[in-house]
Length: 409
Image 1 (cartoon, rainbow, N blue to C red):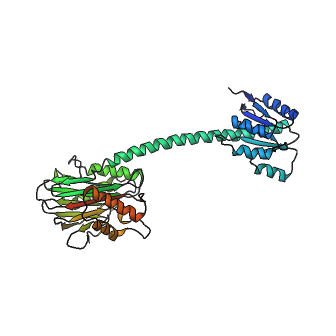
Image 2 (cartoon, rainbow, N blue to C red):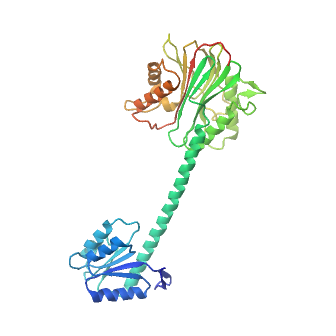
């Protein structure tokens, strides 16, 4: 246990280990005795080599070293001492009869913290030691704060990982088989948490709703908004789902307008969202959808060129009285409806963003694929374009293949 004595500044000095290095036994012993009276735990070394060996075996808070010594000078010892792998910082003071500016500069250049000239004045020595004590104390406090930050960071990383797991649980399985159709859902946050959301729920026999949402921004706030939207568009409870009124499904324009009024009424921040909401009749392939600021859906047919659907529209949660006209199209057996987020169409690459044409090319190249194979091919195509699997924005998409069955859902 360390000894505490009263220092010249009127405050206790916690005992620290001090290494005194001097080839003169008399000078070394006098300095060591003075330091011991002040409460320091003192070790002695008769040469730079011996001092370095002691430093390799144990920890020293302060090193006082004579400048001129045979074999290894004080500055050389300082350089070698600084090169040792140490967990804590040590305060190094060089002692010399030299007092010129050049000598001081050379000593500091070697890594020394301070400089004392011979003969040593006890009051000056104690003042320099107190200065070293303050620096060492600040270093100790900084290390503790760094440890606290590391613990906080580790806890935050664990919380974010759990939040990511919970967020991904909000989306449906990668592939959903329906009577007469199949839906593939792709979602990959760019960080721990994302603001994209894709999903579906049944409306009534033979009808389903598909949606793709992109909340503005990134991180926790966007993820919390996406989680709230998942509850508002959940197929588990019609009473809480904004797509139903008195248990009956609303048309797409009414669903999006209702959601817009809700978000505008209680929006506390500056978040808004873009979305596609589609009402799909599985019996005849009729799709009625609303585009609210989201990238254009893509209609792929075996017999016609790709067609981009919609005119843009207002984002949701931005303009309280916005209206959202719907668009109707008819899917034939074998047709595909792709609903991408802007993380896909704006995915950067060496030759520029993927764009609508790039997405259409990837989907047409993989026209025969379905299910997990299609999901994998779409992600691989994006990675090939970007040159990496780490995308700068959340990516999400709904790929809906209509088979043409007239069996009700």
